[in-house]
Length: 493
Image (cartoon, rainbow, N blue to C red):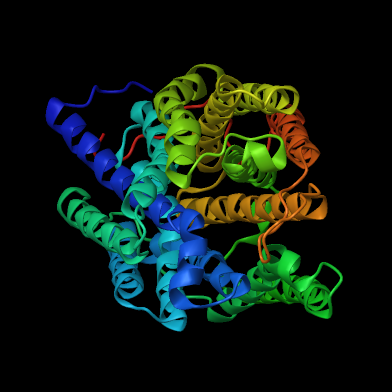
């Protein structure tokens, strides 16, 4: 098939679309990470417990699990742009509510609304697939995926800056996200063309409810198990309920005429194994974020290790370099996807990331070592984020792009939740005996727990290599395209 080079005007329109959806993806990434450094501040300002403040993150996670597949499917059926605009409006409302309230209950409701914004990422990838010619698609998806990393880094820095001083407040953090979301909303309205492809059909309400129930029951014990106790009735009950709800969801989707999720999608190797890779990459990303953040804030005079860094210093000096490198590596990942294939790019990134974690295992006692290991992990995350959307897009039909990318986003969220739970449990399970510790101040974790956490994350990324090279090997199924094969050009190419 011969291809006509796009005109300068067409390239400019495509670039505008990339910038608009990239800004939207960056903003939603910021809203998800902005509360992590200020949970203690929220707990203090609202006079709640650590468990109560923890629901500020859990509420967003559960909301994302429920709304991401629903809105991804809605975008496939009724148009990507109107769905994207609607989600951004909800995100603005959630940010304003969180910024204006001094009530924990209303703050949690605001975070529920913000959690729906996670659907922006799969919707953004669907917009790119619809609007861009195939020669620009992989690079654009890699760049937009990279904005997730830069959004997290920028959020850490701005949160640290906005919460300095003795009378700090969490509210400016949410006002900033509200303003940036309004900017993203205006960019999408002005620059993203109206959706041309819509599959139509009715919303599978029962399928959405059962899938949402399954994800909530799955993620609740993962995110709250360290508070409830891993052997508690609540944790075991939710886990059993998740299994039962998953079975019910499968039964529902097999019976309805227009299911929310085509279950045959899960039998395609590119979808199944890409989601496995997403879970492992999400685990590794959060292991690096939490592990390094906690490690560098440990006071060396008390714990015997660490750097005694503040939240701001931990973000700027130790985490921001890996974020910036991740952004710079995103277009390189897109080039590698086009030239050597998505699964090879995924495997290369995993090896680099495993080497970074391996370095942190043996040498995390100097600033250079911690930053260097983080940079390698940042490259791995960037390559993974570049490869996974390409694998998903090549592995599903056009009208399934939104829901397929939504499920891949959820797999990364589940991996991040598991990473958070494991890191938190490991650090609490073995502590340093500190004499004369003030009442209410927890003993610092033993240094060996950080070594173990980094080792587990190293193994997780090493597992991505066989997933990519063996699980994602070329399939001869007529419904699944090789990720190295060019996709059909959209109508405006």
